[in-house]
Structures are given as C-alpha cells and as structure tokens.
Image 1 (tube, rainbow, N blue to C red):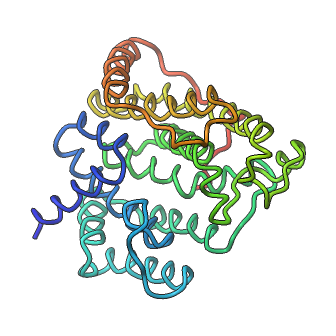
Image 2 (tube, helix red, strand yellow; image 1 turned 30 degrees about the vertical axis):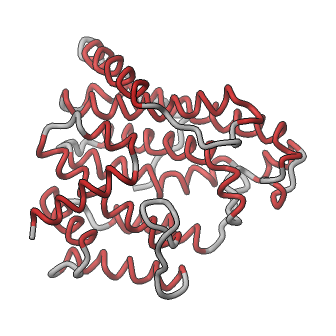
Image 3 (cartoon, helix red, strand yellow; image 1 turned 90 degrees about the vertical axis):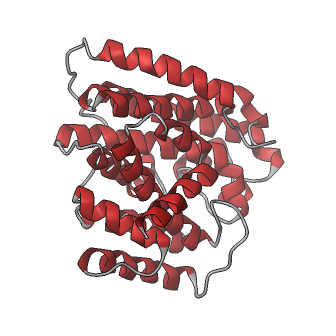
Length: 307
C-alpha cells in the first residue's frame, strides 16, 4: 500500500506543479518523500474546493463548495485519530503528518484559507490579503519546514514568508483567470485608487491600470522573498538548495509578469526547463555562500504569522 501511495504522490506533483517538482528533486530521498506526500494532500484539497483535477478542469465533486470543505476538514481530523480515509491523498497525509509530527492546527489553518474562498471573502487592504496568503500558502511553508526537520520559531517565520511571497506571485500571474471565476484577491482600496471596478478586472480595457496594481503587489512580495532567502541558512544543505531553487523559479514568474505589463495575461507566464536548470545552479551557489554569513534578524515590519 505504501508504495502505491508514493507512486500516486510522485505523479501528483509531476502533473500538478513543474516548478515544485523540479525543486523537490534536489531534496534528499527521505525529505523528498515527505514533501511530496504533503504536497499531494494540499493539491487534493485545492482541487476539491475548486472542482478541478491537478489545477485544471476534468473532475466533478459532489456537494457545494461548503459541503466539500466540511468533508475535507472531517477527513483531515480522521487522518490524525484513526485509520485515514480510503483516499490516496489522505493516506499520504496520514503518513507524513504522523511521521513528522505535524500539529493538527496547521492543516486546519490551511483549510481555513479555503473557507475564505468558499465564503467569497474580499480584501480591503494588503494586510487583509496577507492573512489569506498565510493560510493558503504560508502555513504550507511552515509544514514543509517541519518535513525538513526544522521547527525553530525563527525558521518557521522565514518559511511562512516564502509561502506568502509565492501566493502574492500566484495572484499576480492568475489575476485575470481568477476574476473570470468571480475571485478578486487584489486589495479593494488599491483597485479604487487605480479606477478599476472590482467586477471589471478581466476587462481588457483596464489592462494598463491593472498592470500597475499588479506591479504594486509584486513590490509587496519582494521583502518576503528577501526574508525567506535569509532563512535558507537555517535549513539542511540539500533542503536549502531545493527551497532556494523554488524561490528563484517562482520569483522569476513575477519578474516576467512585471516586464510584460498589460500583456502579462495574454498567455500564462511560465519558466522553461533551461531556466529552471539555471535557477538551480545559481541557487546552489547562493546557498553555499550563505553558509558563511551570520544570521540576520527578521524585519519586524513584515506581517507575522499568528500561529
């Protein structure tokens, strides 16, 4: 059974995220196994809420989004207290959560982020949005840090920073696609400043001001990327290399979005295979250099995880 779960998890990350799959290859085998198992659960939860399969169309789930979320919460709790549900994603989650000792509060906090989507939450300010980013991505960074054997508070803070930066980049890249499904993540006050009606975000007539708002969002992501980079020295060497590669690959997506301006949403922004190899090489050098630097204090002005 365990072999089949691991095969399922490997196929899930390969199909669900080429960026994270590439970075995961740099991890040592035991850490890679745990990270991929955790990713499988996260991907499954995302798909169930959105009615997707591996981030794309192709699967229908019974019940309303609220019903599906309640089911995910119940299944997640079951994975902690008894035999896991008969689902590969939850069998994967049970193995990693018990093996690593993940506190139940973290996966439930992650599911609370999906509740914000289910409830159609809007975000007036950047701080409002950062709470969402923490729940759907920052807490995943914290759990990933635990799979790497690092549970110190300062390390978890940096891991949360990286997840937040990733999510801000995701929002920037997918802003038009999200708007077409009725989801608006950009701070409402920013849209008002730019003269963009929230219900017209996907309208090509507003692409120029939208590019300005998205550039502002990418600016907001930069200090979180910088904070996460300073935390790489807290991780084991191979884990630091893998996470540094993921950081550089994902940040490069934001750089491309910014450069394309109003044309950023004509097609989905990606990083190519050769670009990923280049980022892996540069990240490896950066990680080695970081081992010879002293540890820096985290910027106290950054939004800080609540748990």
